[in-house]
Length: 143
Image 1 (tube, rainbow, N blue to C red):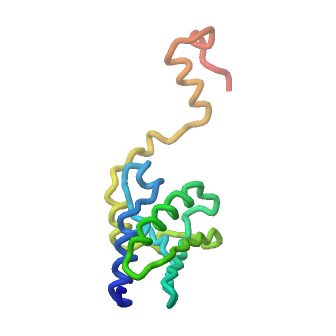
Image 2 (image 1 turned 30 degrees about the vertical axis):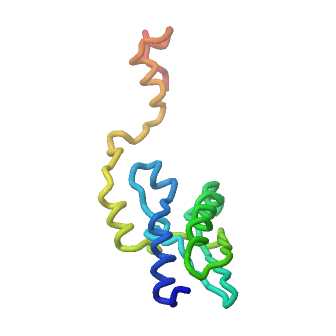
Image 3 (image 1 turned 180 degrees about the vertical axis):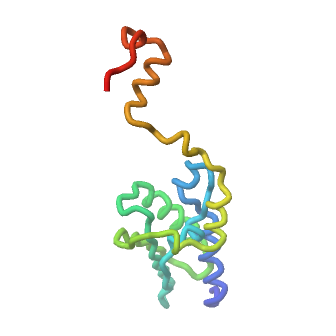
């Protein structure tokens, strides 16, 4: 059985190897640990590990997936007989929960949009005019 310090390191390592699906989709993978989603954990004398996670958005549909990944990974730890991952959707997450490393990862990501890419009112009409589709192509739209 792992001592408390070793178990702390093992739990942290587990969450450092599971990535927030939204950050992966955005092209800048950040671990659940670095996102600050690990609220805490407790190991009972019987070997039951209970982990509390929060999510960045209360209706996160990916939480069950990363909770299952955590259960599988944590269940392999020495001295852990059972794992329960609890998702707390009531936590109001902010970037202040992130580790310094997580914030640095997000700060270093390439900016995908600039001010000139911001949508403008009736921008869809401009696109229609540029393509030359239909009668709207011959005259500008009226305001």
